[in-house]
Image (cartoon, rainbow, N blue to C red; front, side, top):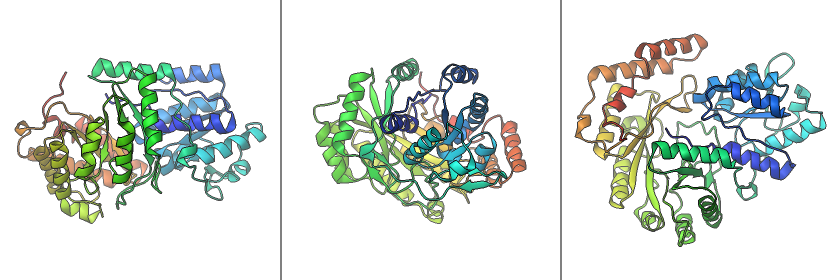
Length: 437
């Protein structure tokens, strides 16, 4: 239970309204029982263009949405990280074009080109729009000439937040949690170069909004919605001490609700924490990746476990709730590496653990398959070491993931998952204390 409305579709919708005068409607599938509701909307609204946000965890649903969109006669565009890494799969699945990366400029140019062509997509038209992937007349994957422009963050309007859909999200949080959060972002891209990263959502360069603009958006969200907490979705929120200092100054006197974000161990400084705590910083999710120094060094990561332990101490001493983000299934990971990660979790005693596994077939894209929060602190109840059969089975499963390079091997991975009912590493999380009510 961690639903936050995706920001990229909301930002793109606001951009197209502002720059092209387009009539844009957002359709959120989070709390829908099935895809039939989407078909009803398509029949009623008859949109000229349908843009579908894709992610590895929602790939099967996205394929179903594209099939229904095609039946409605709309031009279908697939965006988001998964389509950018698997364009052929989405194009053969029904998309007219795949729009990787940020997409504001490319989507605007595509919309204008389709208007001029009576909303008929063909290879000749698609080839003239920079930044698109499409299939030619022979069914071969092609990339259009040129690169889309990067739109300055100051030009992108505030995300289009549909009031009723947003309130549904907040009420569901109230049903399951103690606070109702909304997401926002202060930056795009990541300032840290790691050797194992797809950069499939925003990539580089790293860009950040003005502190005043971010503080003003926080106040608007609190004034508009019944929200108890704000969550920054930046790849790394705790970055740039000068920006953070100015941001803390802008937040004095409001908005009056706690906020949380992410931190990277090598970039975290104690001097940046104190002023942020004063204005509402309540939680940091620390990127811990792996407890194995050997593995992090091999993958050219920007930090080591020693940096994680140092950052954890600073966060906890500042009175900030700590969350850990760890990764399972990294290339070359062994049982000893996985054991070191679980040992790090036990020592750090975080309030929550987010475990991410590497997506089969896309070794540089992460897929979140586990609960984000494990209720209660990680204590000695977790034991000093996981049972050997659990770890051995986990390593066997990870090895099968890394060998998945074809459809047949994908079926092998699925059969292995079926054999264990759910990813075997969930057993590693389940040995931790149970979720609180």
